Image (cartoon, rainbow, N blue to C red; front, side, top):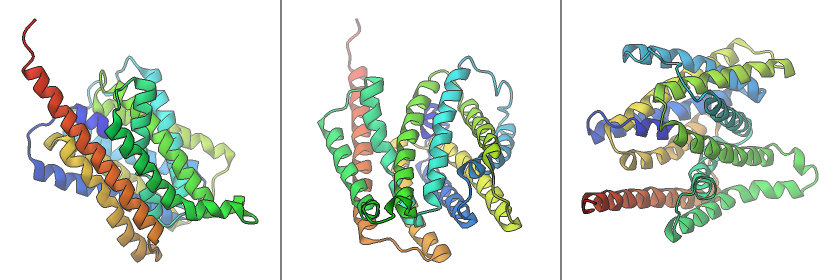
Length: 318
């Protein structure tokens, strides 16, 4: 949803406030992931429902306080919203499946593959011009993803490997990264005509309905603790969305985006304190490569944006 948030423009350039809000949103999302992981290996659709349905309340309160409730559901692009929602729900379900089967640092770090896939999809399906520098960064970043994944994927070659939880978790999160990229491409189209609150609410509603529909395939009986963890995860998801949207109103996207990678540090700390998870050398090495590639892509996008604005400024009148 960063695309949508950034498209709304900034209220006032206050970089430190924007960075603070971004860091708070990252904390909310990592906390959400930890709460979901703490709830155990539940059906992904059941987790999607709680995550989405209970995120709606804080989002609606925020929109009401901003006076943005009027015409909230008005859209001429319902099919696009539903398609974006289906991509997002699929990504969410796969991501939650992987999250409950991998150490928290591994799950968070593998999600960094999404921006790399966005670059590929932008070139293939949107016709965006991607030059050598960005292609190189994407290839290097994907090598980092392979480094993180390889020790767990090799488990597939062992007896009973296809039933190995960690191997399946890696595959699920990598598939989730592809679905996330597809959803982000869809959002890029939606922000041209739709308000950010409309995009956010339609996604939350779509995810809630799809998640609820999986009840027919069997949900787990939850303990009170599991219910509490999932409800809190939903609230954290909604609050994280609000904080992220607000962060892009106070600072440029190129200023804010790099702080997304602080989630790896938080994941290491929370993963160790809550679950005893420690990142492996493979995770740290591959994560550093993926983060470096992502930061280069952000920097390159920023430079290209400056060049395009300079070209428009000095273009002679026709």
